[in-house]
Structure formats: structure tokens, C-alpha cells
Length: 239
Length: 239
Image (cartoon, rainbow over all chains, first blue to last red; front, top):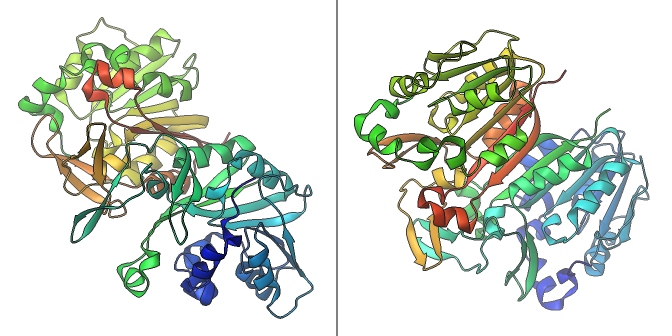
């Protein structure tokens, strides 16, 4: 199974202080880009993989989803998610996304924010998502931009006052990368943009959008934690 | 119009010494990856945009294309292309790809190798290609990997014996980049991977493949000019 860093005390106590946890979607700078990729949740069955505190499940309900199902490997995250006012149409399951089985032909929208780069066996999950989506259904997800997961030695080399320089020698070498973000020894899986696209195409999806999101200067100033670029993908199952 | 660096004496005299010009496809390390993306040329009308010396037009004819049409902005390149043994089913046109008009519903395969990153107005060409393709037709092309066109200041910063380090601060800032590759002042247009994908999707294409090709250690040893990564894309027009 994938590492469950979120249940480590050290990581969690730092993690819950990030603006995206404190403020939810209002503290998530890439949310407006993700939202514009998401189909209208009205009348849909909504699935959030790596749902964390359940912000997006609740957003889908506020915007008319029939039901929302959040899945997360972290007990601490789900405990916090369940602390919000009860909505019987939102259900949460604690499960490892690497081995979780999804029911066929069930969800209209599958969503995932910044979780898939922790998974070793992503192709198998993407195949499961393809099967669990109804015809015409969509998968929208974000991952850390592969440029950020590429370095084997993830130190940022200071270039000048205005820039940082990354070693990309290992960009095409996929596999685990260990970083010390919020806690020591966080394991992420580095994949190229090409591999993300190919996994989706091989599962049967059509690629509907591929965005490389970056924060504005204002967003970086407001929170140095946002000085990161994400890869956003939208894939659609044929009707 | 796009810069026509190929007709500058200085550039051309260096350019024709590259293995990919001297040896053709056998000296083009990414050719086998591109070839595996290309549909079988048998029985097709084949279009090569930025055809250079015409290697791929001739390859398509050797593999059964009915006719091949090469387009290039460079007189010197076409002059060399025409010096090969005559094949009346291969025609060459000198034209600026930024303004060239393609006939509708004509070609089954459109191809381009390492040309599109010179063009300012790529969306308009891609729309033209979409119209010129027959239903079910495919566009296969390569460009320099955006990681290589990203730096505003394209010096390679030596990292250690085994790696080079690139400044990617300007990755998301698209636009012209000036490099001194083979001659001074070569202008390339930097676009993100996302923009290449989006231009194709917005023109109506389905994305069929997105590959980030890199040379093997053997290929780099054989020719230092190959120590470059390319983005290969395949887009298909619905039947």
C-alpha cells in the first residue's frame, strides 16, 4: 500500500495549518481552475478520492449532487471530515486507493486533489475509475507538476534573487522520490506528464483537458506554500 | 512570418553537418518513436510540414503512400530535397507555415518534425491541418521539449559531472526565446505541454498520444547533439 503520511503526528500537526486546510476551498489557489474543469455536479453521484477533510464532497452537495462519497487512507483526515455538520448524502470510507474496489457504472464525476502522486499502482486505480464512471462521466484530478517531483535530490538550488533552479536530469527516470515536506521521509511517485496522459488513454478515456497550473505573484505573496505548480487533467468516458 | 533561420549561410553550413541531415532517418534518434506513432502510410496522401531535406516524404513513398507533399520555408532545404532521385509523386512547396493555406479534406497523414516551435501562430496552422485531414486522419509531430525552451536565459548551468541544471522559473511564461544554437539569434516560441495539448483539443482533435522522448546514454555518447528531449504528439480527427 501507499505510505499513509497523513496519520503521522508530526506531519498532521503541520498539515492542518496549511491555508487549504484552515480555509478550505477559499484557501486552495488552484480550486478555481479545477472547478472550471469539473462538470456541473447537479444531479450527479460524486466521488472524491483522497478526500481529506471533505471540502469538495461538501461543495458538490452545495451545488446539487445527489450524493457524495469521499475515500481517504487517513483516519485523522476522515475524523475531521466527519466533524462537519451531518449530511446523510455524504459518506466517507477509509481505504487504501491502491487496493480499493469501486462498484461498476456508479459515479458521474470522479475527482481527486493532490493524491495520485502518492500511489505506486496508479494504472490499476485509473482502470477502476473508468469502470465506476457512468457513460459520459468525467475524471478531474490534480497532481504535483512532474517538474517538482523530478529531482532525485529535491533541494532547491538558489539561482538568483528572482529564481530557483531545478535539476531535471532525472525527469525521465520515474519512480519514488523522498522529500521532507512538513515531515521527514514523505514518499511521492514521480511520473512524467506523458505517463499521466498515457495511463488515461490506455484505460479507455478521452483526454479533455491538460493544464499546467501555476500561482500568481499575488498568491505566492499571500502564502509561500502556494509557490508550486500543479498538473490538472480531465478525462472523459465516452457516452 | 516565422524567422527563416535555415537560409542563413552560417546556420545552414552547421546544420547540414548534423547526423540527422547527413544520415537522414538513421541519424535521427527519435525517429523510431515517431514512426511507431505514425499510421501505416500505405495508400495515403502524406503531408510533411517543415520537410527539410524530404527524408520523411521519401520514407512515406517507400512505404506505400500514394503521394507525399513536403512544405518548407527554406529554399536551401528544398533545393537539397529536390536533389534526390526524382519521384513525381513527391511534390515540394516553399511556403511560410504561418500563412500557408491547405486544401480541405485532402491528406490522411500530416507530419512535422521539430518545426512547430518556430511558429508564432501555431493555433491557426493546427486548425488548417484539422481541415486538411480526411476523417480518421492523424497528425503526428515533434517539438523541442518545453523544458528546453523554457529558460529566458538559455545557458546550461553545470550542476555536477553527471547533470545539468535548468532554470524553469519562466516555464509558465510563454513567448519567444532567443538561442544561439548553430548560429546566433535563433528565435523559438516557448509553449507549455498544456498549451500544445489545448491547441489540439480546441481545434477538434482527439489526443491519441503524448510522449516525452529522451535519448539513451548510448545515443548521447554517439552524438552529443542528441542530448535533448522532445515532445511527441499524435492527434486524430474523428471518422
